[in-house]
Image 1 (cartoon, rainbow, N blue to C red):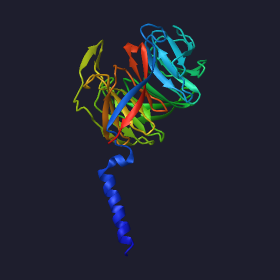
Image 2: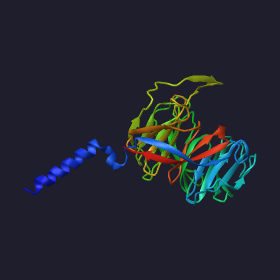
Image 3: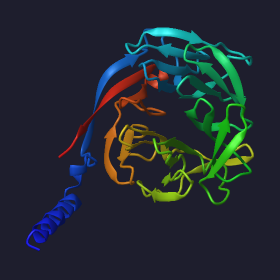
Image 4: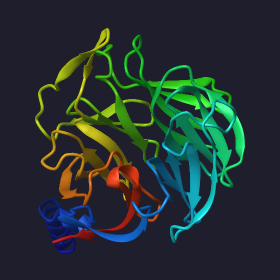
Length: 321
């Protein structure tokens, strides 16, 4: 008994310290600083005209879709253009308005605003095939060389993530909305962590959610206390006109980086950082407004500058207590 009491006391003190000093777990980020390490494209060159999507691979190559150049481009880790492919057109490997981009181990997946498909390329930018998607794609994430997760804009179904195979067949649906919302109100950007937990940010609602791999909701958060967003009549539709959240990316620790939209203090610049449990850790501000953010496997952050003429790469510096 003389030994049990001191051991019990030590255990009790450890629990108390962990409860009151959460930074011991390495999760309590007090501040984030960005150090620019690379800039691709400027007003003086034609490296980029208006980039939209960006991904990187394990060798450090950077891939971007260039909307105004109707192309898919590959850069090395120094920012040198290695190759580009594509031209304006509706044929295989051609683009009308290239948009979102995702990458698996061996393949690149590219959406086009005006083509009902996802085009697939290898890492040397050789066209491989099309995956037919009959609804407009709002966001996508390559889960493997044979699985693609997609959200679409639908007028008939409640919000859901579709998991497609390489032939465009739906393997699974993950509903994240119980009932059909007004058009575009259930639009989301999403990402998966290494355990296949799903994280969502709503574009036109103040809502952030986490689901487990079985599709069960784990938590839901609001950061900005926004009750509703402004809507306008566009043709026969009434649509939201302002973004609450514009994008989401996860770092290697599973922390969420969420790009705010029009309602943030610094619109399209403020990035909210949450732990995997949904705790708001800190907020930092990008030097330029951006439509998206991307974090690679080495925790470098990519964002936009000069209205898409420039792609910036930053080292993320965590400041703890």
